[in-house]
Amino acid sequence: MSAGPEATRRALRADLLDFTGDPGLGAPDAKTVRYRPDHWLMIDAGRIVDVRPAAQPPGGDWAREDHRGRLLLPGFVDTHVHSVQLDVIASYGTELLDWLERYTFPAERRHVDAAHALVQAEAFVDALLAHGSTAAVVFPSVHATSVDALFTAAQRRGMRLVAGKVLMDRHAPEDLRDDVAQAEADSETLIARWHGVGRLAYAVTPRFAATSTPQQLAMAGALLKRHDGLYMQTHVAESRAEVAWIAKLFPEARSYLDVYHHHGLLNERAVLAHGIWLDDADRRVLADSGAQIAHSPSSNLFLGSGLFDWQAMVDAGAEVSLASDVGGGTSLSMIRTMADAYRVQALRGVRLSAFKALHAATRGAAQALLLDHEIGSLEPGRVADVALWDWAVGPVAMQRDALARDLHERLFAWMMLADERALVTTLVAGRTQYKRPSDDSGASETP
Ligand SMILES: [Zn+2]
Image (cartoon, rainbow, N blue to C red; front, side, top):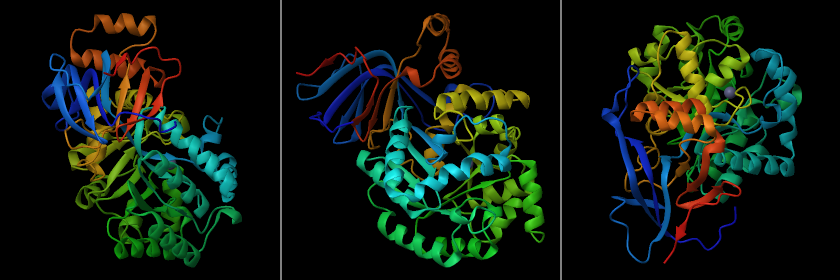
């Protein structure tokens, strides 16, 4: 969206909802939920500066946008998603390892071309924003071109984005493999070019233990030691066949997670997707290192990978965020992701509250990424990355919404029934980066 003449002092009137702490896994508990119906959220120069009741509108030089009756949330944080897999979303009939071979690798191969990579990266970042996600931890491809494209697209929109070149020097088609020396040189170049630039951060990104030699994993660990503040992202214990393969490749390791631990890849900025087939010792290692699991329920259901044990992670004191994992996941919508997380937990006999799910997709994810000073809540001082939603779209959802007796019932119905079509507008650092086509409201009363 073009950066038109937009006011730098904006006030949005809506129902404000965010969190002051973790609501916990269990019965809905509103203690840490901060719900401020019909309030003004005030944004100045890209940051949230104040929140006021509707009866105290800001003065003359503020652009007031009246969205009363709508829901205003912090932008979603999608902690695991592949920017190069939009072409293979919703591909039929495979489990993880076959899915990589048949669909994913051919799509990723095309990102060696810089022009193709940039077009796809722009489309991907715009798609995130059109689903209400304002920050993400992203896998591009093995090609440096795909990393440059993704960071360029995010930078143009002022987005908070974490990404890095995929490391993959074995068990992949030849034109998708790097080698240790080239991977290290490319990573160093990309770190120098992008890490800490604006709202971008670099992540050392071994695809998973099977596609990196021990030498490459050691190089990845050395990169993390050499540079401050780098993230690490990878996959762990997604499917049983994958876990069995890793055990064969690394017979000396105690577990799949132990391969990463051994190579110095686990720290408080590590994001590991899935973590379905872990044991309690693994979970203690995660808790001790501060690494988080990016739970990807849509992908896990779609590929038939398994049912994530969220309760065991809580018991171990380890952190969990939510992720779409497109293209294994079938939607970029974090609302659909939350609904899928509810279904996965229901199959385990656990009821996931809407509070806990929404926390994991906003403030909880921001905290796990050490970014809660910047994103994840509507606290004054935070960057104004926010999304405005309809509480209900369509007659069934509207009827259900009208009957909700308390906040959790209402929010839960929203989580199960809404999707990206309920999104009205997305702001990144106070600027409109997505607006629903043909939206008639927003009843702007600029003085
Ligand atoms: Zn993934």
